[in-house]
Image (cartoon, rainbow, N blue to C red; front, side, top):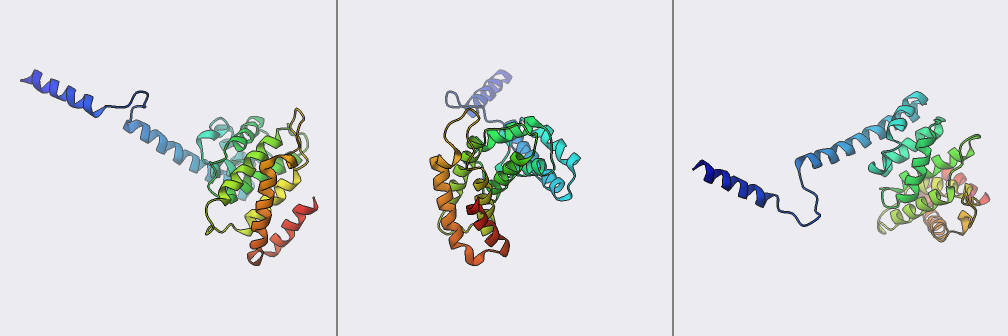
Length: 226
């Protein structure tokens, strides 16, 4: 009798674990790990944002030192917040910036709004202005951000992008249009996706002028004077 019940449990367990070939096993542990990664990323983003607001460099260095190799596993918002804090507060972790640049170049669909794209662009542009910083491939990074910006604008006609986000993105992009890859080649201003992104952002900025602030009115024309 016990043997029969044991065999039945084994058959039920086998049916419950039926998967397609190559499909990963669906377990509660996998869901817990994914949920933990999401919470971890959100906490890192909040710590970075607070460090940036309070101008506490030591507070920003800790999450950057922890997250530099984990950036692809976090959301675009968290990456933008971490990069902003590290650039503004002068963090010197070259590993973090190297991975942040690579992440921005590859994360075309990982940003949920233009605000995060603009924040990442402004932060990387600010980082390039600091003397003594290790140079990075700005063409790849900003081409990736331009692609992400275009994808955010394709979210639908009813989606309104704040003029301040457009202004900051345009201004940051304008500062690096003459940049070339480290090994030479086509400058950023001649990259097709960048040309389309600038044209699209310009049209959207023009439409949003009635809602723009005085600072936006100064930032957008400043981008075209560069």
